[in-house]
Figure 1 (tube, rainbow, N blue to C red):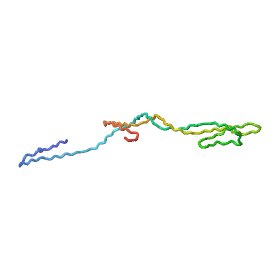
Figure 2 (cartoon, one colour):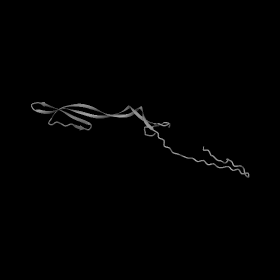
Figure 3 (cartoon, helix red, strand yellow):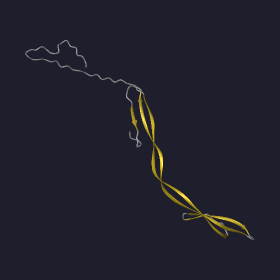
Figure 4 (cartoon, rainbow, N blue to C red):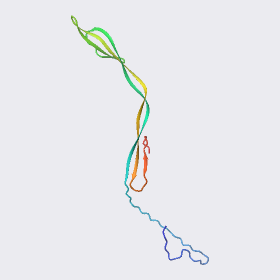
Length: 149
């Protein structure tokens, strides 16, 4: 509060039964000053383990050998019949004449299975800690997994 200096009394003497009260006025002066402050931000990672239910898909192979012992003129090529892969196995046999004999075929069938499985995964969350060098109190800001503060 400001002081008012005046040579006159605050309340005027009574004249003709009228009381005179002087009105005072206060003024405000606002100044701006630059304050330098250092701020450091560091992050802290919080980790937790969480069990996740998921479906795993894998392939298994059923391999079957089929004996044929057939004489062939030319070597059959590898072929597919639906989901079956057929690989011919050949052997040259010396007879009075040389013949190409198809000894066997290897048949490979692929089947897929889906089975439920649980895996433990590590989830992380960061926390930003702001430290100021002045006497301003510290603030902690925490980030959530969806990015909100």
